[in-house]
Image (cartoon, rainbow, N blue to C red; front, side, top):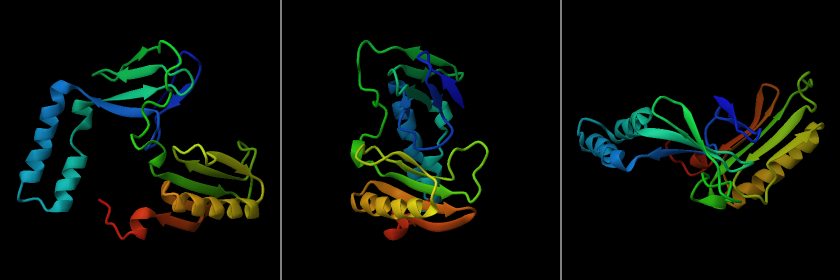
Length: 193
């Protein structure tokens, strides 16, 4: 899904971990939601993995509504029960990052690099590096026309972000081949659900 803000900025909802998207839960639904969680936790027939899986998949469409904030003008969009959006304009120069993680710069993001041997007709460059973090000290997007430059920058940035505790996963792809893959869960031997 994507839509256009009145200021002209296009707002996309096509992936996970979006810094300008959140979910809201009505105070009237809060205890119903926690009751659902308690029901799964109390179910002795479920092992820990099944219980967690059920909790993660409680019908969010039923209780939760999406909220978006335009990163350009700060306008807020709240989804109604039928999926329509209602917008609210800021009164001044409010923070345009209200919906990002409460961990702010400490939120662990992602690093991804990709290289294509043949430049696609829709692209000006053969490669890119994307560091999706909330820490503005690190570059967000970089284009590359040299594989060696992309590879060198990827590994340098990977080490900086990993040492700073700013990423949860990283990957580097050359064509169809994964050159490097890393995740904090694998490094710490944490089982994911």
